[in-house]
Image 1 (cartoon, rainbow, N blue to C red):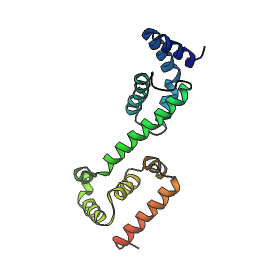
Image 2 (spheres, helix red, strand yellow):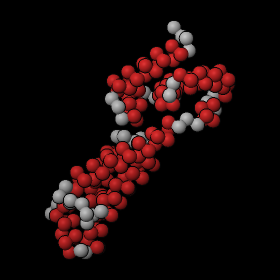
Image 3 (cartoon, one colour):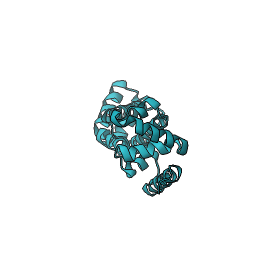
Length: 174
C-alpha cells in the first residue's frame, strides 16, 4: 500500500495514532528529498534543517485540507516556496548596509576603504555595493550572487560589468 492510500485510509477513519504513524513514514521517506530541495537554494545547514521542519509541520497542520493524491509533489512544491520566501526575507535584510559592518572590514586599511566606500555610496545603490563587496572582497562567485538575487548568471554578469563601469566613471578611473 503506498503512502497516499495509507494516509487517506488513516484520515477516513480519523485515527490520530494511525495518522501520526503514516506521517512519520512520510517524514522518513521524503526527508532527504526535501532537505536536498531546500539545500540547493540555501547553504546554511541550520537554516535548511529549520526549513525542512517547517515544510513537514505545514504538511501535518494542513493534512485535512490538502490534496493527498501526490504527497511528493506537495512536499517539494512547499519546500521550494518556503525556501524562496526565506531567501526573499533575508535578501531584504542584507541590502540594508549597516555602516558599522562596512567600516569594520580590516582595520589596517580602514581609512582608505572608508573613503572608497563613501565614494561608492555616492555612485552606487546599496544593492550594487553589496554585489561589488561580496564579489571583490569576499570572493563570492557571480553565479552564487545570481542565485541569491534569483536572476540568471548572464544577467548578474551584465549587472556586475555595469557596476564596474559606473565605478570607473564615478571615480575617474581609466
